[in-house]
Length: 258
Ligand code: ATP
Ligand code: IPE
Image 1: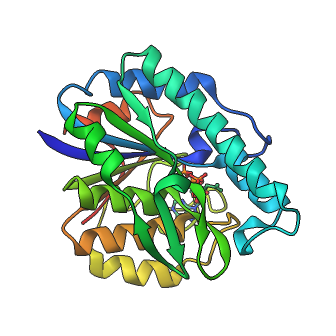
Image 2: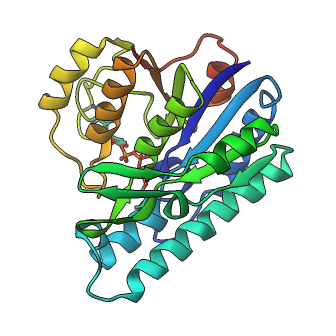
């Protein structure tokens, strides 16, 4: 069976401009698409933080290390688990057999590197026919105290251990454009990008507002994935059945980085 990692972007599953607000209809719609293919694939699902994670992380300045207000980290972890529960409930209601796994329990970092990844719970779940469900999370860091480990980075780690050849990123745009499509009306969607071209693109894009670096972070992950023979596909998570089409290897509109 083909192994695939799916990232449900925070700007798709939450209202990014409204703190702690999920988009339940969109989550249900994505769950229904996943349920139509979940028996034919080895899947891992990861979701972003959106207006749960990024909002709390900024409020307590958690992205720069342990917060001055200690409880802030506890609140961030609690709110991410709450969002994870909302996503898990929706997937389970649609018949998708997910097992929730919290990244803070299995990952820790040292500087920019992941130095501990306890992958057994993930592999055990997959071997028993379940689908691990993780999320971008705060994790403990040996130097800084803590840091945000983005869902995108977690996707890459999962792809490596389950030998996935494909990571599908559901975003709130149709894919990767030559410039930010929200700021430029004439931005053009790039359908295919080779790993050599990605490097050039990364240096052209300035960093976004998000604590995990927005689209630049995605491209860095896609570049690293491409170097390992894993392709990244960027699609619009709001678009009718687009995720299902990609998972079924049918035609889709989006960006492939290879
Ligand atoms: P999602 O993956 O659903 O977008 P996310 O929160 O992980 O959730 P962001 O970090 O918000 O994603 O990054 C996506 C955003 O990056 C888009 O909404 C878009 O406005 C912005 N963006 C900036 N430059 C580009 C570009 N060249 N191509 C596509 N999106 C871009
Ligand atoms: C961020 O995860 C998690 C936290 C801020 C705790 P992501 O970086 O994967 O989230 P999105 O998809 O950009 O919202």
